[in-house]
Image (cartoon, rainbow, N blue to C red; front, side):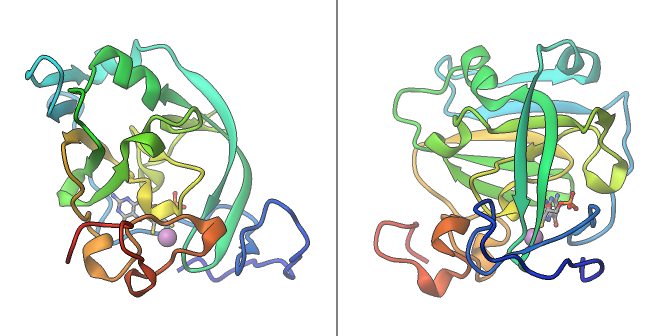
Amino acid sequence: MGQSEQEPSSPSDPRLPPGQRVQRGWPALHYGPVPRFKPLTWDLQVFGATALAEKHSWDFEGFNALPRTTVRADLHCVTRFSVLDSDWTGVSAALLLDLVPPDRDVTHVMVWAEYGYSANLRLADFAAPDTLLATHRNGETITAEHGFPVRLVVPRLYAWKGPKWVRAVEYMRADRRGFWEERGYHNRADPWREQRYSHQEEPGDGPLR
Ligand SMILES: Nc1nc2c(c(=O)[nH]1)N[C@H]1C(S)=C(S)[C@@H](COP(=O)(O)O)O[C@H]1N2
Ligand SMILES: [Mo]
C-alpha cells in the first residue's frame, strides 16, 4: 500500500492538499492483478452518447499515432501519499473529445479499464487541460504495473479517478458511480476539499445511491 519511503511531512508545501504527505519514488497501487497486454486485440473505445451515435475505436498503432502533450502534475492517493512533479506524456483527453465529440447533453464520462475497473468523472474534469491518457512518465514508457499501455491522469482529483490499463471511455447523459465510488469513496474526489469518502457528499455531488 505504498507505505515505504514517506518523507517527514512538510505541511507548508503548497503543492500538498490537506492530509497528504510527500512520497518519494513511485509506489504501485491497485486492486487485483496486473493485466497482460495483448497488442493484437488491444483497442481503446469511445462509446455511449457520441455526437454521431457511433462508437469509435483505435487499435494500438492508431492510438500511438495520435499527437501527444506533456504536463507536469502531482498524483494524490486517498491513502494520503502524494507523488509530486511527474512529467506525464500522452494524448490529452481534450483531443479525444475533439476527435470523437460527445452529444451535446453529455455531462459525465465513465473511464473503463481492464477487468471492469471504472471511474466516473464530470465532463468538465475529463476535458480539463491537464487530463491525459498517459503513455509515459518522466520520458519513460509507463510500466505494466503502472498501467501500460495507457492510463488516465487527472491531476485535480484523487488518483483513483485515473484508471490504469484504460480500454474505453463512455459518454454519459447522467452521472453513475464507478468502481470505488460504489464502494464508499467520494463521487467528486477533489483532494483540495478532502473529498475522500461518500459519507461526506453533499446534495449535488453525485447520483443517488
Ligand atoms: N485499473 C486500475 N486503475 C487504478 C487503480 C486500480 O485499482 N485499478 N487504483 C487507483 C489508485 S487508488 C491509485 S492511488 C493509482 C495509483 O497509481 P500508481 O500505481 O501508478 O501509483 O491508480 C489508480 N488506478
Ligand atoms: Mo489510491
